[in-house]
Amino acid sequence: MKTVQPIRDVAMIAAMKEVLMRQHYRNYFLFVLGINTGLRISDLLALRVGDVKGKSHIVITEQKTGKYKRFRINNDLQEHISKFTIDKEVAAYLFQSRRGTDRIHRVQAWKILNAAAKEVGLSEIGTHTLRKTFGYHFYQKYKDVAVLQQIFNHSSPAVTMRYIGINQDIMDEAVDGFSL
Image 1 (spheres, rainbow, N blue to C red):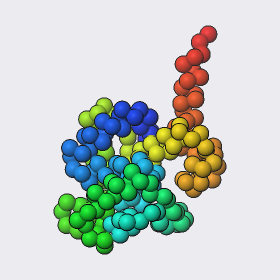
Image 2 (image 1 turned 120 degrees about the horizontal axis):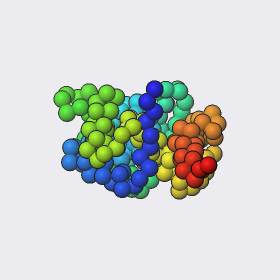
Image 3 (image 1 turned 90 degrees about the horizontal axis):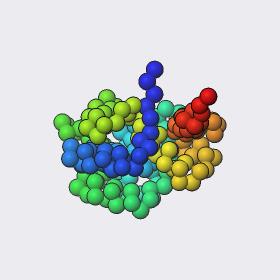
Image 4 (image 1 turned 90 degrees about the vertical axis):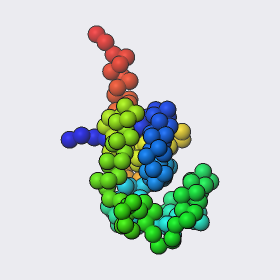
C-alpha cells in the first residue's frame, strides 16, 4: 500500500502553489485551503461558497466520521477566501467543475495535485497530502500534538504522530546517525 507524505519542504510548497496558480486559480485555492485547514479532501470538495464567505469559522459535519468540526479561518485565509469567492453565488460549490455546476470530485483533485507534484519533482503525493502537510507544519511550529490530535479528531497522540510522518522522520534521523 502506498502511503502519501506531507510536503515537508516549504520551498516545495511554494513551488506547488506556483504551478497550481498557473493551471487555474481554483486549483491553487484548493491547495491553499487544504494545507491551511487540515480538512479531508471529501470535506473540502463538499464546501459551498456560503460555508466560507464572510465567515470566522468553517463549520461542518465530517463526512468520514460524522463528527462536528469547527475550524477557525485565520486572516490570511480570509483574504484568500474573499478573493476566490468575490463573484461566486453563495449556493455554488466552492470547487466547482469548469464543466457545469457540479463540484470537482476526489479523482479530479488527485489528478490536479499529482500533475503539479510531478512538475515540481515530488512523489508520494495524494489528496491526503494537503491534510498531512497542515499537520506536519502545525506540529513543527507548535510541538503540540494534543491540539493537533483534537483538530484531526484522532484517537491518540501516537496516531497523529504516525499520520503526519513525524515518527518516520525520527526513525530516518536515528538510522542516518547509526553505523556499526
